[in-house]
Image 1 (cartoon, helix red, strand yellow):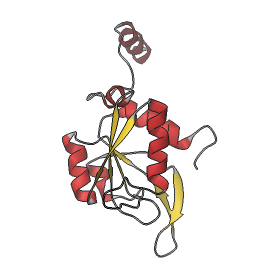
Image 2 (cartoon, rainbow, N blue to C red):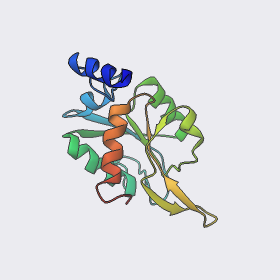
Image 3 (spheres, rainbow, N blue to C red):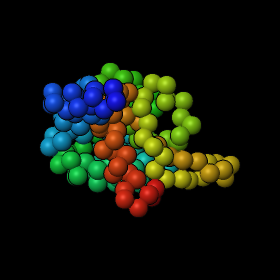
Image 4 (cartoon, rainbow, N blue to C red):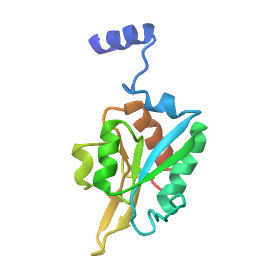
Amino acid sequence: MVCGLSMLLLAGCGATIPTDPDGTLDRASGGTLRVGATENGTWVDVREGADPVGTEPELVRSFASTLGAEVEWSTGSEEALVGDLEEGDLDLVIGGLTAETPWSEKAGTTRPYTTGSDEGGATVEHVMLVPRGENRFLLELDAFLLGADGPR
C-alpha cells in the first residue's frame, strides 16, 4: 500500500521512473550518443582514422538511430574508457565485454544480450557498460538489445 501510494505521489509530481540523474537518455535522444570502443576481434574492430566496425558498433548505430542520435566515437583501453564513463564523458562502452567483467564495480552493465565462446571454448554472456545510476538509459538500451524475441 505504501509503495503504491509513493508511486502515485511521484507520478503526480511529474517524476519519471526509472530515472537518469545525469539525463543520459534525454541528452542522447535527438542529439549525440557518446560511445567508447575498445578493440576485441569481431566484436569491435578499431581502425586508425575510421569509426569502429564489427558486431557491437553495428548494434550501437542501430540503437542510436532509434533515439534519433548521432554516434560520437572514442577509442582506448578498457581502463581509460571506464574512467571516461565514470567522469560522465561517455554514455556507453563496448568491446566484447562479458558478464564476468571486472568493470561492473565501476559501471552499470546491460543484461546479457547474446552468448559467445571464450578462448577456451566456454560459453560467455556479452554485456555493454553504461554509467552507474542511469537506469532509464539502461532500460531503453536493454529493451533494444533484447528485443521482443529475446536475446540475439
